[in-house]
Image (cartoon, rainbow, N blue to C red; front, top):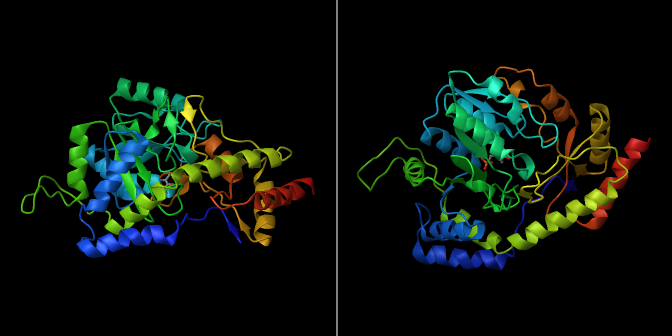
Length: 359
Ligand SMILES: *Cc1c(COP(=O)(O)O)cnc(C)c1O
């Protein structure tokens, strides 16, 4: 069976070593030494000044919205994982969907201004598949209209924009370290900001608002993560170079074997250093997409229609008129890509897809 992705598991002994330490210290969670070490090592690896390790990528978005005190309407992309939209609604705000750019598949900045109303407080954009948004254009609009910017950078571990980690852009960037992501800590996530006062606020929010054992600085929630999760993160960080390299090699190999398949690929900005986290393709029609899925499934291969359906069709939001998203989301397919996927398996996937097309 070939799934769209497969969580990376490091050699067991490397994880066991950290478990010995946890048993010696008897310190399991609450900002423990491994969580601290992971935060430090991640800052070093990503070359960023500030980050907070959290329970998951969803609580990271919710804490970002709360910390920026967002109210009213938040302009967002309909082409992302459901957590981007659900977090907005969960925080009592209203998502306003803006159509995507057909080339990057990210929110189209040229359509943002028309969606701004007196109630708009922020833009929450996803760098979908690890492809950076048009950050400069979004920043310009945000400045002009005095809006906050949050980037859902859940797919972006290792992605750079203009030479810096993409996590450094926006008022806050968030990411996910879920088991299915390129870099993971089983469950986990983080927030990033270059503003120290915002970082401090989010560190209170992450820990029930505690400012010392008997003092509370703010309204908080439990966004902490454990020593066990941090241990997995520390071990996996030692393997990240080879994980990134295998994704790149596999992507380039897909490019080669799919040359004769009619499809389009999202375009990565020339300012970006891409992490090859996913292998999305846009097929010519929904019909051929469904036929390809069926044929692959028959052969125990499970690509995913990430991201179908578009988020404006969720039962708790208002549907919008988004022609680009509508057509792309019905024709999108993410092909299997993960560290241990072999060339032979990619050949097999490609052969089946071409057979469907040519029938
Ligand atoms: C995975 C993901 C999330 C949620 O992260 P979790 O760690 O699973 O909570 C949010 N946004 C996007 C775009 C994602 O892919």
